Length: 445
Length: 105
Image (cartoon, rainbow over all chains, first blue to last red; front, side, top):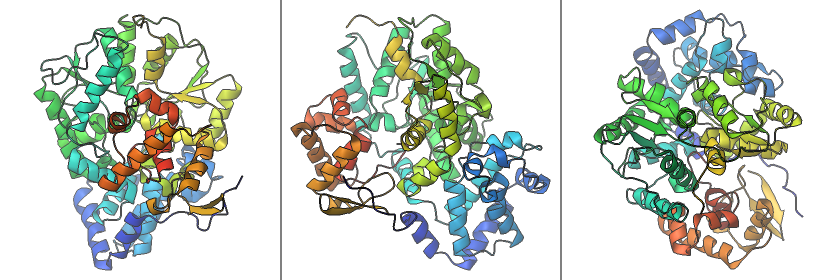
């Protein structure tokens, strides 16, 4: 059996970044940086930059810093020092190499998970400062290729995986048919005006993971929910433009999403198990459009499952017997406060919960979120090496009996899969929906 | 990018284990991915999935929806996952020599 040969270079070429940087001129760099810092960044930016006393208390909050043996270059403040502060100090007069490095730092060495913001004595939101860097990188045309391709798909099709107009309803009808083999009366109601709930997902579900739509349909059906899905654009709640700093595109996507829900006259939008999409509709996208809170209430799957379980709309036939541990995704826990709901759902569905430590809002990031996994294969090992602490945290939970790892977020799911596989942790990874579907009372097939 | 040697061939792969170029796809690559993905036995059904993926990719430059894959092969979704446990976007695309799909996957 052949073993992989020695790596010839540290990582693969990122065309988006390399080509983008090759086209830069000193004038363009200077003007773009100063435009963003002077014209787009208001008092919030100024306050953060001027308040930071460089104490370094944010360092140990960061999984990259911890996983790189406390290398200060990976500390949150170190990442600000290598990007924003240099741009300010040199008044935008930095070179292409600097921009390349800044793009790598902000796109592949920070997950915007905001754990550091909790440990900063002043509450400085360093993730926000990193998004300012991404905004500059975007305006310079140097965004890493894989995530930029995703943003292009958003721009063309209003979804992140190049799903064409007719392919979306076709996929829903296909999953309706497959689910009808199990529950003959099941429907996935399309375009039902006045339904209580619009259910929204991210594009990987119809593209490759259609079983998640199947499961959701069974849960909705059995809970007796008055729900619908749109047949038009606006169904994909994801938003990689939010992570590339393309705020205009982010706004366009969120507007389409909310307008679709408004057109269907639904009371609430329930979304599947995704973290970044939650951030885009509950925090960044709605606020960019001018709504402090979503114009139509957003209910994340965790909250929705808790609601239907509390109301007794779903009965558990037999609890999931294998011991589980629970990964708290940053966007729905630090960003949405859903950690106790997540534990309620876990206890309702599973016999044994083995907490990992730290947990809840102090949990370590998966190292995939913030658009980092979306930067693609050139940076996979960086994600894995940058999150050794996650592997250690998971090994400790496993030593205390955990066999299954629940994570209610797509990015966490994929990122943790890579961590578990690489370090040989040996945990099976599931969504809440997988377990709920498995243990719920259903009609005999 | 890392290189692997297998059955007398040398492949250049990205960090997710996808081949550097569709042009370099060959039968030995299929065998390499079979081993990497932990697939016990390659059947005609695996080959059919690969053919459909490649045909679609040549025409459209991206991987098809799993719906299209199901419709053209006649395999149910569950069966596609039985053939490729890591899924159509990972294992099947990898074996067919397609690049890693972009997006949250």
